[in-house]
Length: 229
Ligand code: B12
Image (cartoon, rainbow, N blue to C red; front, side):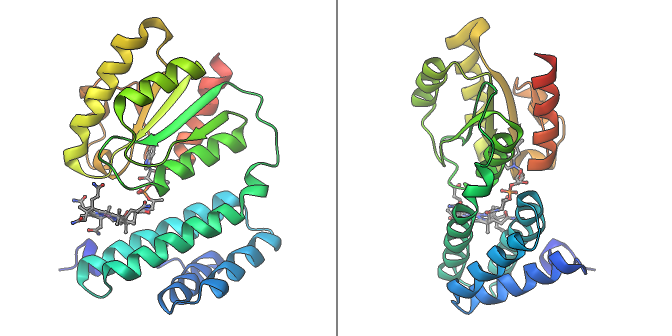
């Protein structure tokens, strides 16, 4: 019997699947320049940001987690891969910022206690490319300070990420604080991340407005919100 730990996330057999395997190999041998070059060349040759994020960076990061869980790589190697991916994503920002935002403010963050940043940063970048005036706050944002920022910016959309089951309670607290602190001015609250993925109704029980599984779904869902407003 195989379970998640024995099944690679890098099983796609097309050009992007091959790129993902080469990118991971470059990072694991410490070749940051090579890893960066692979992605920038793919972007030049027409791969979109959405493809590179969801078909290269995301499965590579998941694979890194699997390799770590198996004991095949250590935390230093995971840190290197994550740091390179964050670096290369930032090299793609001229493309992410190629259109001026015309929509309302959308904020994406990891909930207080959650140190995992890449998922909500991808969500923020997709929203930016969709025309939202998007802000990514990083990981472990204190609930009180987030509330202050929501008030100051008049954000219409808040995306909150939780990676581990024990972070869901923090999201519930945040949802409660946003609703009681902002009343009718509260933004629409979308939740996501690994902690929500196993239970598609969990978002409802903690009082959020919606849940989406990945950045592409979060983007499509938020487009509908924009159209409806
Ligand atoms: C990198 C990493 C870290 C780094 C993060 C650094 C950083 N700057 O981000 C560090 C070292 C801090 C870390 C710490 C820990 N980690 Co960690 N980590 C990872 C790893 C390898 C990759 C995460 C990542 O970048 N994923 C890539 C992104 C793109 O994928 P994603 O997060 O799933 O996001 C997508 C969707 O989920 C969704 N989404 C995410 N957020 C949101 C938000 C909204 C609003 C929406 C709509 C959608 C959405 O859209 C995203 C894009 O499509 C994962 C493996 C994995 N499977 O993810 C483990 C993993 C999540 N970590 C794990 C663990 C156990 C830990 C620690 C507890 C380890 C420890 N003993 O200390 C700590 C906990 C820290 C904390 N308090 O949060 C486990 C969790 C297992 C579980 N029980 O669920 C994993 C799965 C590894 C594993 N295979 O066992 N980790």
